Length: 391
Image 1 (cartoon, one colour):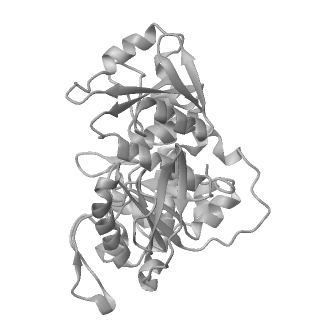
Image 2 (tube, rainbow, N blue to C red):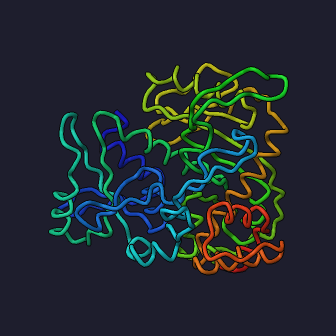
Image 3 (cartoon, helix red, strand yellow):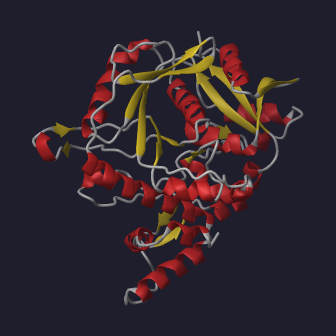
């Protein structure tokens, strides 16, 4: 079974990671600080900094839905930035905040410790694992605990991670738990009357106009990047990790969506979800991400699967129809989405200063406190290079 610890270790080896044997902990996967952040952000795996563990998952949330699904509105949610009881904007999970609170996350070798949890056994193992790590040769803050539930509850996030790794290697921007629609959405145009209810894709890989800007500063190129990493890129030195390519790539809107299931038993459900996402007309290609499904039987949907503990992909045999009006709106939304994430690399007082400069430019009064709507107004009217030049 692919989910057994030995198979998982083999998959990590095939991804290019070293499996290291520690006397107390056994076999662990050695990774970089950046890879650790990526892994924790996607799977929810915990840094064993303390007896309860700390995850990086959910710290860069900005929008609940895409504007296409909310009549052009930007529905903001706290995550990257927070709000006080009066709705006033506060610093959230910026690069400065996380570096100050969890400095160990951003330096030193990290190790993934896979702990299998039998069905029916308590999952509250952090304290026991933390005490065990303290007797090993590795500091607890450098161990990332991945709970591998025999019930299969942890497998879908792990598959999301593998899919992200695949498309990062192809130069894409990637994310899991994609902002989509969670409530009823009425289709427009010649499909008026059709209502779609619920659904959040597990995975997406994409490009938009702003990909050209990110390429210019070296954030993407031969390799892509997970969106969760963008707000903390300065902590990993990513703005200077590579020399920007001299090859001009004219990135255009492209959206790839995947639906994850831990086994072929979930194929029908995955197909139903993908049909729902496809009917909106935003995605250019869609995939089932199921380890034991090499052929999902639908020509319009490709497959991402495991074969001999390696990640493989079959591209769709047939293209899907798109809604060009929706794509134009979504491309603009994506560009603004990325600009929000890049703001995470600025000191909070610098962001407030940018809001005030924007308001002064548009003859709006200076306020004692700003809310998310003021931030949104500034971001959608700001060139991404203006943000990058302040980093």
